[in-house]
Image (cartoon, rainbow, N blue to C red; front, side):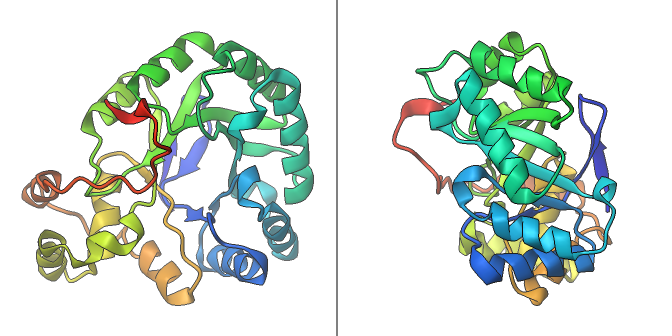
Length: 272
């Protein structure tokens, strides 16, 4: 599994399992199967209400904790100092872990000063309950604000990113600030699978359109966390490291003009 080095100094696998909308037994089995197949990066959040199942799955798998990379997120309504510490404690308890590899602000909240949230994050890092910190759903303006207000390096910004939402300006700013982008919904919930450009390139490289889309993201320096529960899809998502897209193929995908945002809270957070 390929990794990238975060600004915190830790290594993060470039492919992870997204678990949004995975619940109950299905979630538990998906996590166990993913780790068996070679996944080492699991992405969850307090609001997903599946951390107990993920914790049970990880507890049943015979794998060293240091070989796993676990990400969770504090919910937007709980960004004040004491709330962050309390929710992180609950998350660790549910996941049956001593620490998180990465802890993110799930959504920005204009009613809470980022300094207060990052003060709590700093405490968690100092107490060795969190190794790396970051944000999610932050636009360019908020990324710059976070960079200024956090004493601990912002390692990651997790956002919606796929061929129909190619956020080049945000990617550029994150790279300039040594922040790695993680793409959620990297397959646009299946909407890109019938795209003629992706189908053409898939035929050229003898892969599936989904694999081409994930490869495109990885070659742009973006981490991907596609959700999958079946063994078939888990395996397909893993099979993106044995081929490379040419510059021309990358440019073709970069040039797709369709723009669809699947996750939009109805506020003007995303204008840049």
